[in-house]
Length: 138
Ligand SMILES: [Zn+2]
Image (cartoon, rainbow, N blue to C red; front, top):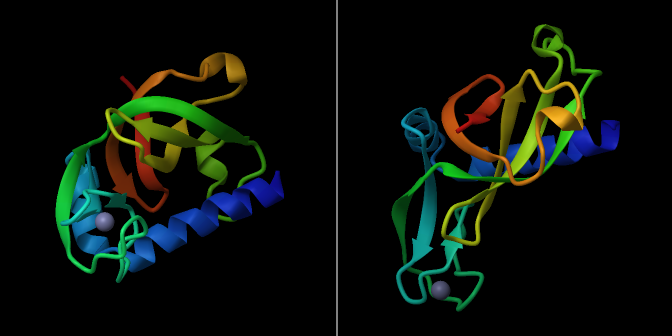
């Protein structure tokens, strides 16, 4: 369990440190995901990179992706990190965004067991706070 949390937190910090954090947060509050799109091949990146991971191009533009999709996997947190006791039980969820090959992770409250959240459940991004990206059922 602890290792999975560490992995999730690593992904989280990697994304949020490298993107323009404020823009990313503001778009999340509007239910959207800010991504960087290669101007040559259209490949999408969640992190700011200097070269496209697909074609090596150096040009990017910001795109705002609708924050709706399906649950791919998740970890239910029953032993929270310091300061998160009040949120238990919750799940750290990986969702696949609709229509594109891009996954993003975030927080879902009130998930106690796998029965509460079958894989493939339709979800949406609803905000952002100290917990990171906030996800709810559609
Ligand atoms: Zn490219």
